[in-house]
Length: 229
Image 1 (cartoon, rainbow, N blue to C red):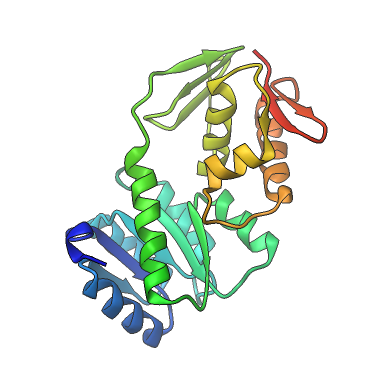
Image 2 (image 1 turned 180 degrees about the horizontal axis):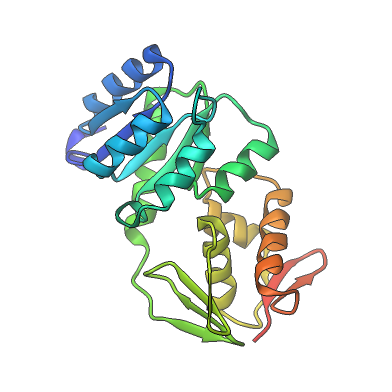
């Protein structure tokens, strides 16, 4: 990997295992990244506010404040709303992945992972983030969505949506009345590199319906979902 492709990109590593932090920091700095580390969630949040990284690798199981709560706090900070957050953890249970995505994570990477593979995943996440275009405010069927400010308004009421729910709603609203297959949704929202099951989509759809109302998103059995225009 040519370090010129990554020089200047800032990464924050948050993990309570010092040997993992040292190993990852060494390998990422060798690829040209600027790297800072934190040994717990509270320290990670404090450093993130000052360091303003482009990407945060966050462990789930940490004493005091776990990764899920740490991610939620990070997503509440306006200046970190565009930061990519990926969980790097040995946990692979569905409920852990769903909790992570609900908290606002962009990716879920399982330990152990080879350094070159990790760098490839990081670069893919950063590319995908940089490729997202600025979009105009959209309003359909009483739902107003501002993709650049991460704001959703329903009948004048602002709704607080986690990152993945917001991205899913934005996708469905991009073509009201069109059916989006599960494969399309998984590829667009979670990316080709991430392995998640249909249950993950179902959970996010259910939570969107709880907040918006059942009438906005229709299930097309055996195919996928559509936003009713």
